[in-house]
Image 1 (cartoon, one colour):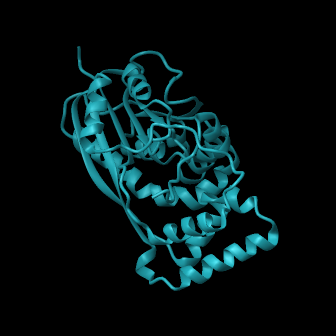
Image 2: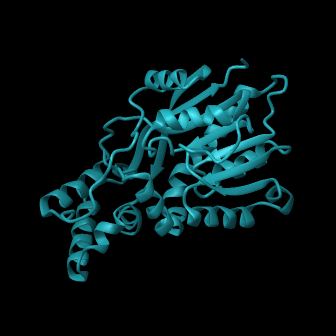
Length: 291
């Protein structure tokens, strides 16, 4: 589905969008992704448990967003120093604010926030023991380049772990209702066209192949299910104030109210269960070879 993770444009456009919407992202989208993102950290901890010299001491979170993975890494590995990297300065400000709110001073001292992009990491070779990333590698224009960059900044034997969307048609009925309304009334005419991006992962085997071509080994790829329960009201608010905020903002006030009312009426006719979103994601962990 075009869905709650709908396609967005080039990296420059994406960065600008997140600069504009950082506070809304924290309120409306981060809570949807957070449980799955935290599950990635648990998978890394399981993969490294009991191994000699496997405890990461230098961790990079690529596309940190609100800092969920960076904070989780600080909690999970008390000796680790963690860098949260994002292309959006506004998102980094939100991440720093969340760290201030949720972490103690000692934990915050092990965190730093840097501006930069996945395809050109601003760090020397072999700088990190672990690179993590949550729902970022589908956005980059060239995933192969981004994966090679992750490998470059890892020490030999270091690991990359990421989560992103699996490319499926998961038929979320509330989103289909919204898409049909947009199409029927041509509400998106005149809005900015979308550019190419790497996109969602076609299959677990494709994820493994991409990692192998980027120079990784000991590759583990699994699928998981992201679940989130909206209500008719909360999903309409999500569309209007985050996911489709540009579309709603392009409408005259009377037209905007009419669209909102039509959606509310159609959503009210759906059962509660229709608002439980379940969609598959890819969880990948791989190692940079020792030689």
